Image 1 (spheres, rainbow, N blue to C red):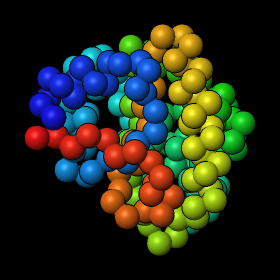
Image 2: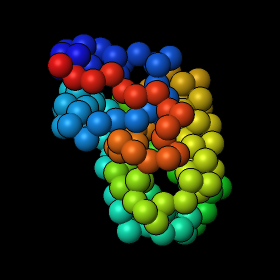
Image 3: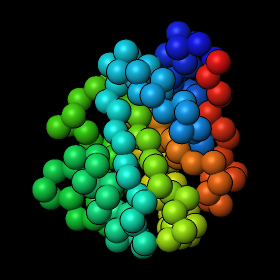
Length: 150
């Protein structure tokens, strides 16, 4: 997929969702998101061994405000209100989810929160994308791969 096609793809509201992303495609995805005026966040989970550490990393790397409580309800609140980071759309790229410490059950709960946020933003006409940058994580096996760039 060309850079232009990728940029067009990211702009399609109804396609926004949760996808797997090849690490080789990460730079082009960021470039396309920026070109569209989207906020692009990179979340690093390599050392997150439990849900508390995952939620803390999300809060840190997404730049959540000080009132973020590092629990699933607070995550949901913050993901659906980026008033401190207004943009035409949002892209969250999560790396390190294939860490040997990663708990698949934690990611199932996170994906439910992400899905709710995606739906909420879609109702507002704003694309919200979540990408797991990994090739072998068990919890991403059921996710569609984001189209490779060519």
